[in-house]
Length: 306
Image (tube, rainbow, N blue to C red):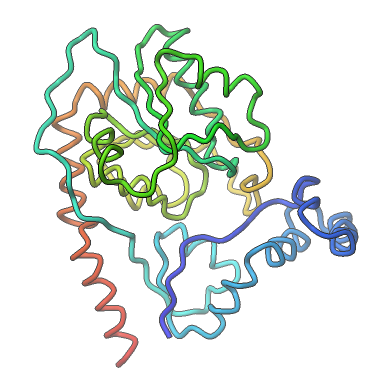
């Protein structure tokens, strides 16, 4: 049996995480936390109960594991280092244009991201605050589109974030969508770049889908982002402390983001569209095209069956 996996849960055992459990389990976990802390054995058990158990069960019976990024394999190594494995990054069919004309000097930079309603690790509040800061503090016009906006935000998002989204002339919020075709695909192809501050995402498929429409990426070098983006954009330091357990589903408090560096990256990518879009296309020709991905899976299956 060959099993394909992406990421797993590694939340620290915070008070908010504890509240996700029924009271008898919560009592046991609280006791373990008092002994082992938020990032030790208690966190292992809490994440196992709150989601990891199903994947772990399948992995125990698998003969070979296919991880969706090198980072995915890294986080599973805590528990399954002994399992034979391969890394095969997800792919898509390239649909981007050949060339996008350079915008006029006074045109805004067209930035897009896909909205996430519940995961703090997607860092929606910080992304929106960066756009506000660039426009209102630095005077750099960004035309920002949120795809799949619901109006709901995760824990620790500042209360004024919704007002910024719904009251700013430089932000367009489009409703939830079922596919990246049609109007959503057109928005992506008109944009200059995709922006994300996502923290420790094993394989963010929205990034692949956006790149498939020709978009270069500005992101934090966290999780599996480097496996996808490569040089088809700019990845900024994650400033991660390297702790295995961290904020993810329940808590904020992520490593700081240097907005000045992000803005410089956004301007560099927007000002060199032809160069970066050529690199996006090359990423699909050498790594991300569906035919290449399928061939890698075939080779894994052949190697396991021998």
